[in-house]
Length: 375
Ligand code: PMP
Image (cartoon, rainbow, N blue to C red; front, top):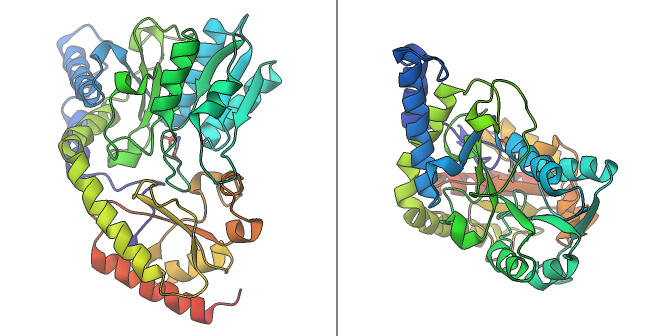
């Protein structure tokens, strides 16, 4: 049995993505910077993917910069904006539940003298845009908020918050990590009021090692990486043509069906939650209106023990966030989950390709684990 329910960690590349990566490694293997035909063909392939990704978020190709993944996009966004605009304005406002690639970068910026204000959810476990707005002032250089939380699926109110912030403080730069929202929740860059958006390839059935930073026209980002001035100098280093082509192909495949897949995944989530509710001792940490792609539960047994029990039966889930390598990130406690429940949290992350029978099998084995494993 092989039931993969850890799609927030990474997804299986789709056939189209694999095919374009292979084509770019076998036939179209040139360096996009080369001035000859072979280089030009590679450049055309990169720009084709750039256009597909730009279109998917209502942007222009000139706004899309390829990186090695969302970790790099987040670093580039935060460090690049603070270098460009942070001489006088020294404060950054952020949500308290950001992914490590944002949170660790914030800590580094804090050490270099920036003040970071982390806005937490209120006692009802919800984020409110007024709290973010109140944290901003004339000294604020940027605000960063993820769209969908990777541990619980919680959807942050970025649209309302960025709109309110831009209205009161037009100079504050807005950045959002959209890794867990992209190709799952439809959005356009302009409608989000986002100056910068981070995306990752491997969360959407493309390949690990490629990402995008969208930069709104007129926003200045000082590069982190210096070198051959690829990507208009924003991100030096020879473009990974195969991974970029794979990224473009995955977006081309999935972009037209975001809404249909959202509905299908919502139905899968409802079925899963209904079946889980029949098992004693399980609580759900994900809000009802969270992204249906991520379901976080606590089940009274140490996460790792249950994770390995499920693994022994061929079912793969995550404990908390896979990115934290078994370490608790503190995100669940921000959402009001007790330490005990955080210790026994499991993250189930699904796709539209997940089947009802896979989820039913998961529930059956989970029930078995609940009955046989010691707390
Ligand atoms: N942000 C979020 C919300 C994520 O879930 C992840 C992946 N775990 C990242 C950033 C980092 O993406 P990448 O693996 O492409 O560096």
